[in-house]
Image (cartoon, rainbow, N blue to C red; front, side):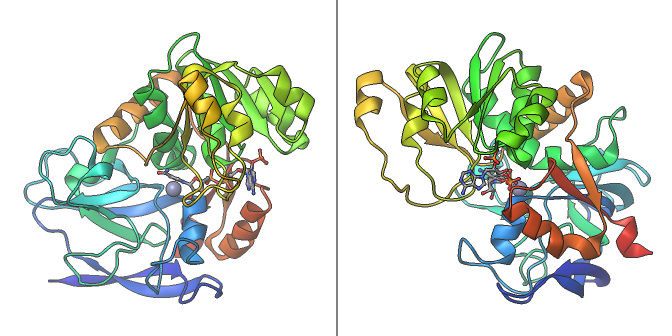
Length: 348
Ligand code: NAP
Ligand code: ZN
């Protein structure tokens, strides 16, 4: 396998800072696209992986799965892209099943953009905190021409991860939707639910975010630590997306669902504590569910929808060497509302 070296930013241990390193990329195979990365969004999953919060991180770890760039080479069988096109890559770069429409649930397993087994190189896959990436054409997305490229990057994870459940649970004009947590995923959930015509409420622990939430499109804000405000929205929502990354009490949110409605967890992975009380679920035929990113076809659908409705992320552009400080700010919920790395800062 022919390879070439690129500069990357990654970490060698859970408690080490990210720093510059060198990784290998494969030369394009027949159905591959090579992309010069212009922007890469910073997802809380990058931090979870870098610090081995979920276990299973292989080091060195190079995070980044909100990638936008310019095509610099294509394999002989590639038809959708040519050199010079803008293109994007999200959370997956391969899947062994030829006919998946929901690759993220592929029973034979998908290849994550980082920290998965790279079947070509025998290492782990390395993500978008790097100069270039090479991926199978069928996992590369088209970018709507009218959107700001840097602000598109977060759509590739924060966008699709909230779009997929909104669509799966049929959120439409007039649906009453609530979003828990105003970070990267939360702010995209607000924008996309509004784009679909829903009436949107934000649940936040942080009163200081109210003004921003309304500016982002939320119709109402409920401070989740205020019991009176929580009581006032009992039995109100058709659908709730919970984006909180750490263990938290889900029960107060369940009481705000209408009968036969669903709360979907997209943030926290693990056992809930306090445990889920099944009484309101049984009495109200309510459901608590989970959802993982989204398939490639629905990612393209989401990007096209964003192009049509002029939806992008609200971003703070940072330089690559500031990533460690950005992680600390993310841990303090101090992100407005997605960091995006300007890769030009890294290459020059
Ligand atoms: P983020 O930007 O850090 O936002 C998370 C928000 O949750 C914070 O801004 C904060 O909002 C709230 N929050 C944080 N800690 C909390 C706590 N201890 N208790 C209650 N609320 C808390 O993170 P993100 O990038 O949106 O990612 C959110 C989670 O989704 C991460 O765990 C990430 O790994 C996961 N994720 C899952 C998928 C999937 O496929 N399911 C895909 C991508 C990411 P307020 O200040 O408003 O309360
Ligand atoms: Zn992500």
